Amino acid sequence: MKKITFFLSLMFCSLSFSQNLVTNGDFQTGASTPWYGNAANVVDLGASNFVNQANVLAAGNPYDVNLSQNINLTSGLTYELTFTAFTDATTSSRNIIVGLGQNNAPWAALTSTTALTATPQTFSYQYTINYGDAVADRVIFDLGAATGFVFIDNVSVVQVVNTCSNGIQDGTETGIDCGGSCAPCIVSPTVAAPTPPARPSADVVSIYSDAYTNIAFDNFDAGWCGGAASTQVQIAGNNTLRKNTGVVCQGIDFQSNRQNLTDFTHIHFDFYITDTDLTGDVFNVKLVHFNGTGGEVSALEVNINGGTTPQLVANQWVSVDVPITALGGVVAGNLNRSDIAQIGITTAMVDNVWYDNIYLHKNTVLSSESFNVSKVKLYPNPTSNILNVESAGNIQNIAVYNVLGQEVLNRATNGTFVNLDVSNLNVGIYVIKTMIDGNVSSTKFIKE
Image 1 (cartoon, rainbow, N blue to C red):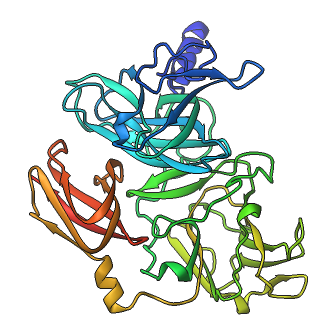
Image 2 (image 1 turned 45 degrees about the vertical axis):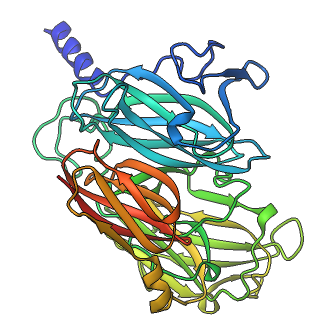
Image 3 (image 1 turned 135 degrees about the horizontal axis):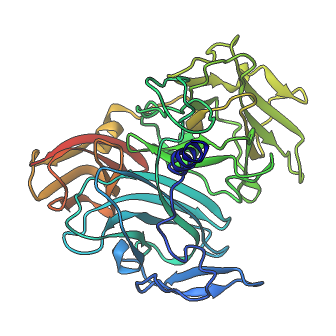
């Protein structure tokens, strides 16, 4: 009887772990096999640190330069794609498209656009396979839409499973589970952070937001508190930062691109906490002023806790938009902000938090005339194959998301009229995000 009990315990515990479906994801074999595509090129950066390196010399379609590996996925299941990526110092920053999809026609795919800097960062995306099992699957890295180097390492794809199985009801669980002890299940937000208003691009300095063009960084996650502080995830089609367990702060460094914020009057950020006990929880954003030196001279801080306005509230988005001159957390006794070189985000005592839309602004919005320029016209809607996208302003990028918030199509554009081929999309409702003259707007359309 003891042997049977031990066997059952071992069996149920093993169900909590998922196998990495990617082979040679760290490229440490020194060869590209079983990766394929014209971007497959394993190099040694020194001391047997092997990565895949691709150099795009001319921009074109994203899929013109590709790195792929065939894997086995099952429709209806959720998988997490994780990888490390960066570009070189000369390129400085560029985007790539990543995801999971079919390895043959009709080439259905679930993808995300990833912004790279010269600092290695780890990215993680979750996808629920919804295109069936008729065609085999692959990991996708499409690199061809922009020029410059792309370095990729530590690629993994694992099935997302529920590990909250401790034999009792806890957290938000119901019923009876089997397995070892674990923390209460984490329930991610299903609604994205509120969409920021359309503002003149000159009146916004965006640190992190899909609504505006973000500034260039030296290091977006500088490891001030002992490791990577956040992971980028998607919520309802919107890129969002999720706090990594055990790391209490994120340092964002842009010393080579310091910002003069003297004329900027407000600071904004959104966050979502799911902690059941908010006692002692703090969400803090700090602007670090160097004043022409090599380090902090003064700082401006926004502290949000249970006694502030707004205050910490669980299970809903909290939007903070306050005048800089009203900040209570003034370090070194002044409001100087002519040489901001860093931003710090502290999440002391907070276990589960997501944050988005971190930016400074001048408390202005686009005039009705400018706003109309950024609006789009979609037709025919519904459509079965071609969706026409038209605007009075320059359409710079188009991204399409399904109802699960997964990016299914992304296209760099340059013009006021775009014919978008959506024939490969499944029937359903989609959200199309268009970047027009630096401003992002969202509109729904129906694929029939």
